[in-house]
Image (tube, rainbow, N blue to C red; front, side):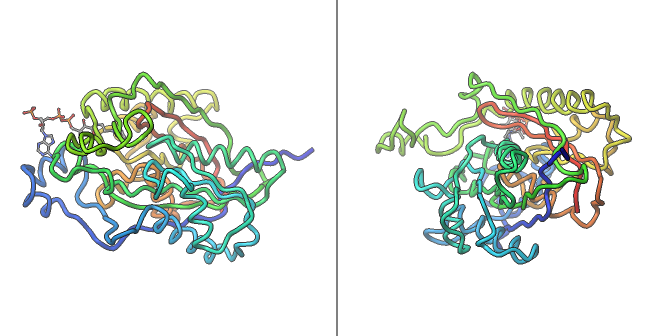
Amino acid sequence: MTKITAAITGVQGYVPEYVLTNEELEKTIETTDEWIVTRTGIKERHILKGEGLGTSVMGAEAVRGLLKKTNTQPEEIDLLICATVTPDYFFPSTANLICDKVGISNIASFDIAAACSGFINALTTGAMFIESGRYKKIIVVGADKMSAIVDYTDRTTCVLFGDGAGAVLLEPSTDGNGLQDFILKSDGSGANHLIQPAGGSAYPPTHETIDAKQHFIYQEGPSVFKFAVTRMADVSAEIMERNNLTGEDIAFLVPHQANKRIIDATANRMGVGAEKVMLNIHKYGNTTAATIPLCLWDYESQLKKGDNLILAAFGGGFTWGSVYLKWAI
Ligand code: UT7
């Protein structure tokens, strides 16, 4: 029997119009463009403005574009998965809301929460439905409105994050392209290093939690940095090794965009030159679940059928992992 693999057959991104530059941040907090650029690689980020507009608005924009670009009707979609840690609501899921906004109904749709590794977890989940032969067209979205949970008076976090969404279409392939392998990991003992402390069932919202700013992201930057550098590099090296790949074989590393220094360390470990590293952190910052699909969208014109890509991510949880796929379009 011919092996069915899950191939990305379309990619689309969306970032909101408003651009928050480092220069703008210099006016409100004690920071400099020079510090932000040298420590992170970020120049600017996009922010979703407007009352009542949540992550689903950006996800829906990306999905609408994806349907149009791939000439797909909403009725053809079998499943939509959305990776996000900034859902519009705890329930219903953002995936449900995106479907409704783009005219998809009566199919399964659900969210996956794995912070910055959300997209690779959602992508591999979707791929399993395709490989099983059960579903033929699946949309995987990575979307986050980080501005909703960022404290814009905290210079250690507010310079890092931005808003955005990316979406891919997954379809069965029998020509050997598509998803080849993946490694997904988590370590919940890392929770306190990177967390939104209140608002969930452990600490539901109270006046006290709001006064203590516990609904914003809390991050111990340097310790997260140490974990991220080693684990993202380890898991990328591991997936190359077990698939007999060298840096030469890789067309592009598609890394989560949290910090350019983490990306450089991962590329070095893999033996991949800077020209083969997808980078858009300078213009979007860290958009959490959206970074990887936004990279694929930005670099799409440089990709050829059969190209070997390694996707790699590290984030809150801790969660991390890598995906090896062959570009299929
Ligand atoms: O995507 C999810 C996973 N997240 C990550 O992977 C993020 C990992 N962490 C990082 O990217 C880095 O740790 C940061 C970019 C957050 C910070 O860079 P760092 O090189 O680790 O700097 P640091 O935290 O050691 O801070 C150095 C100094 C501190 O001052 P003192 O205590 O040495 O006087 C900070 O207060 O820089 C200060 N600082 C700033 N200065 C100007 C922190 N933020 C800023 C800022 N502007 N925005």
